[in-house]
Image (cartoon, rainbow, N blue to C red; front, side, top):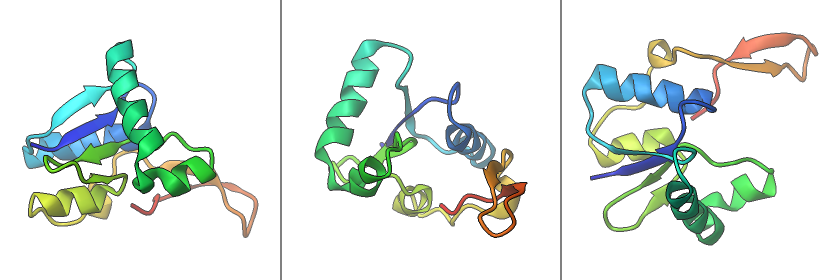
Length: 116
């Protein structure tokens, strides 16, 4: 079973993932990293030692949701994790919370779909 580390309490992408899990009726072991220190330690162990987090660390991001396959393969790419379950990529209408960002081209606050 795929493990997913994150926290819907603090992360829009995690809330979007939770919605996808529920609507597609997927089975993943959901580990809330802010629920207790053991969960946070387990996540940090993966984050600090996996090359899947190189860009995440370089850009000062947290890296959730994080997916771990039974064989130990790690990704922060939701579509890659879905492919492990023979599921199609995320569709636009499955993203219930859009990312609010400042558009670099127009400097306005806009809602953009975050690329997965």
